[in-house]
Length: 320
Image 1 (cartoon, rainbow, N blue to C red):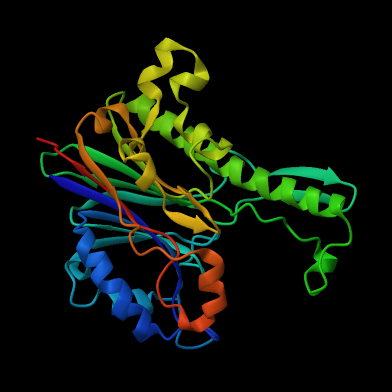
Image 2: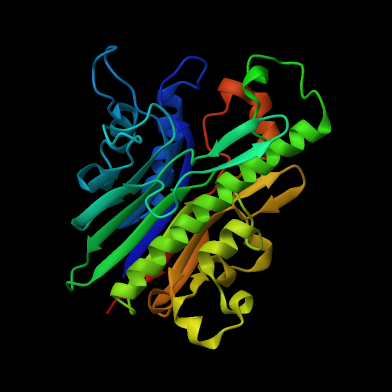
């Protein structure tokens, strides 16, 4: 059996105003161990540095994984646009018990940066906040498992440059609407790039074992998830059925199918989508949301909140 999990740890690292790292480790380490994952996709991992010229390192993550099976796992980390090391915040990390054949960050490799000219923003680039992290993993029987770790932009409106230092809100509803459109295009554009990547893998290996995992910042029927999945119910084309990615959380009872709580709503924004060949050998899916706290309640707690407002999702596969 192989266990694959995804978990957004939410700004995990040391920075001014953040919850004490030791307190976060005390809560999150047993949660990671309980997942028992062979492949673990993490989002929002911060990187620190010892000095202004020192390279960024994932020292907080090292402390979190110390003493766990994951400490000896192979590790792949997303990189900044220049390719020179991780970003200061919100990196993607994929941990694997098996060897990596390849691991690469993908940002605008398939979809060039587009721009949009809006009245209140001017010509604005629709560039992605973070890369995708694509890992090819060699399974014990020699086959490849392609894992795409992602964290799409949250649906929060982009601010015009002149408003970024202000704290008195938006000047008008239409400016907010333009900013929200830009954010939505960034989120959906990167989902489209993930779909391009999936199509390339399937063109090379039609029976490929593919998993796209992470925080989509989108519910199951929203555009980003549908773009990555390309489900037959959307394409209405039978010959494309083999290219569909299957949403594994659909196997979880509806009352337990959520990974975040927004007010009174419990919604699924963290997903594992797999190729049909991998979905066919899925033997179980679980969302560890039993102790999930509502987002605004967590915000009111401030630095006293040391957990994550996201629940990890884990799937088990029988690869024979």
